Amino acid sequence: MGAENSKPSSEVKQHVFSSDHPYSFSNELVGSLEKNTFTDSARSRQQELQYQERLTAELEKLREQETQNFSKFSETLSTETPQSDEPSLVEKIQDVTSSSSTLAEKQRQKDMSRDSVTKEIEQLKAKLEQRKKLEQADADVTKAKEAVVSCLRTHDRRPLDCWKEVETFKQEVGRLEKEFVQKTIR
Image (cartoon, rainbow, N blue to C red):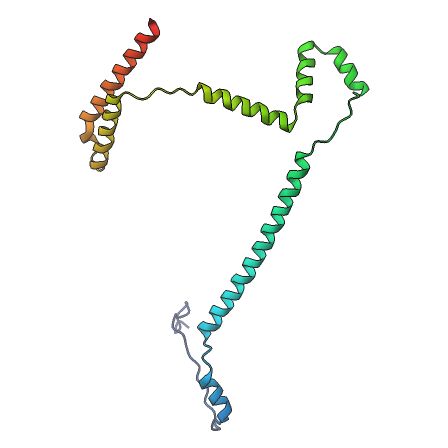
């Protein structure tokens, strides 16, 4: 006990079999082995290529199937199902007992369709584009901002060395704020 290690050794042990009889191989076998250039690495590369080809083919099949599913579902979503114009008895009772604002909202929701919502979204986008009138930043503020950025880039390990540029930037922004306040007060 204790003569062997508790962990297996990392050394690979080779087993050598010895035979009492001499080996004899046919010349055809030796010749075919010598002519064969197909090594283990070549076999593994070929097998890897086969795996990749199968995987690519399967992925293409899945992509095609998903494309077909997507087109099928988009067609079913785009076609609107006609609903009956005649309301049910429950809806009639709810209409009689509800307020006019509730009825208006219900009618608006009923009139909504995919196309009408898309048109409404486009109209809202157009309104937003008309409202976008951003003023260009002041040249002095832009120059001060660029000075701060370049200082921070040159002193990336010591950003506290850029305090002068930061103070100049703060002064320029403060000046713009004062001008804005004066414009809004008048």
